[in-house]
Image (cartoon, rainbow, N blue to C red; front, side, top):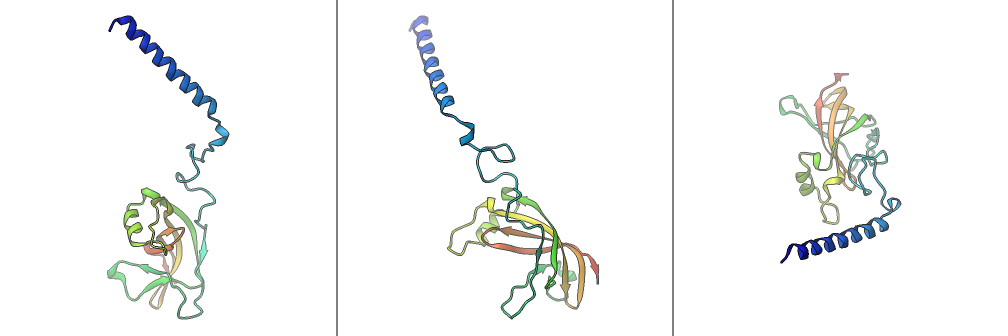
Length: 170
């Protein structure tokens, strides 16, 4: 092919591409595509929003029967005397999200071990790793201001509480 024919074909192709881009830009309206707080398009994912499922604090209710739920806490084995749990009637305060979604190291294990009641699996973006301070009962002793960590999913709830920093003995 001669140089003139190649130039003509290239110019025609560029004009067609330019026309397609103009049509696409005319059809684009910013109002139809809202941005999240992190500046990306879409509604879900990204940074944790203020209206997320994480409460700034929550109260562990007193048990009224043998069927009531206790929030048991994992502790290192050398210090274990009896079962540790969050004191009934106390409030977990200072709740903050440490990590969410794929930034959680164990998110794949959490998805596999905790299916939804209908048998489906959760999504990584539904999981949060949280921390807060609580009153812990260990046998006959009670500890105040213990830092605890746990995982939380919207459809499953709070699971796997762990003590990271022991507080003052009461």
